[in-house]
Structures are given as structure tokens and as C-alpha cells.
Amino acid sequence: MNPQSQSQSSEGRHDDDSALSEFLASLMDFTPTIPDELVEHYLAKTGFQSPDIRLTRLVAVATQKFVAEVAGNAHQHCKARQATIPKDKRDKQQKDKRLVLTMEDLSKALHEYGVNVRHQEYFADSPSTGMDPATRDE
Image 1 (cartoon, rainbow, N blue to C red):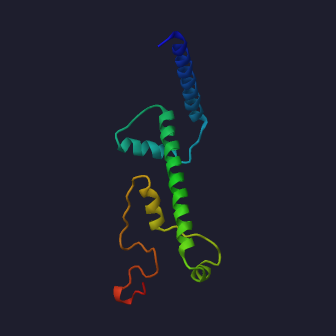
Image 2: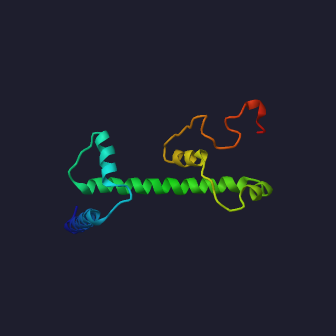
Image 3: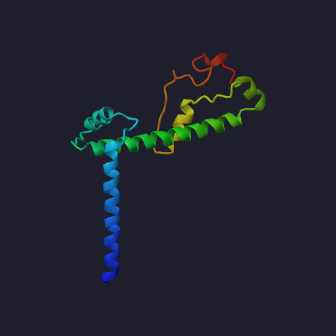
């Protein structure tokens, strides 16, 4: 490495270090959606303990981002599912234009992140769930 590239590398590392320091300092003033106590509880259950609240808040921010992304993806799956319903049935089912998030939507969204969710038979995603198979219209 020549002296000029070492100088540029050192400056880049300094910029990264200062940006990281600023970010960690900003975590002290940030109040995450997920309470520190809840994050600390689950971190302790996994065996992780740290007296630095910034680490706890960093995990809370990462968790908040993950939940927001999964919810957004589930919302897109819900919209796509609603779009596949024939127009006449869709108009009868949803006069108020609300979307109903189902376990199927959530499972698909979580599957994109490598989380596989299988729900029990007793979860009702449709009115015919739990009925005698002989009486189902499906």
C-alpha cells in the first residue's frame, strides 16, 4: 500500500468510526417503540447481558425495523390476495374497504425472512374452518 492510499483508508475508517459514535450517542436520546425492559428480558433469556443501554436500544431498533418490514410485506400479500377475489364477491365482502390480515399473509411474509410458521387447525382464517368436512362448500 502506498502512503496516499493508507491516508485515504485511515480517513475513511475515521469517518466510519465517527459516524458509528454519533449513531450510538443518538441511541441514548431515542425512545424505541419496544420498551428497554422487554428487550432486556428476552436478551437475558438468551444469555446476553450488557450494562450498556445503547446495545439494548440497538436491538430494539433492529427488532422494530424487522417487525415493520414483516408487517409491510404481510400487507402487500393481503392486498394481492384481495385482488384475486372475483369482483362481485369482493364487493359483497368488503363494502367498507378494510383489509383483513390472515395467518396465511403473515406466514408468507415471515417465510421471506426464513421464519416458517404453521398455525393450528383451530385458527379460523375462513368461516368454514372447523366445520365438518362433509358440510364445507370449499
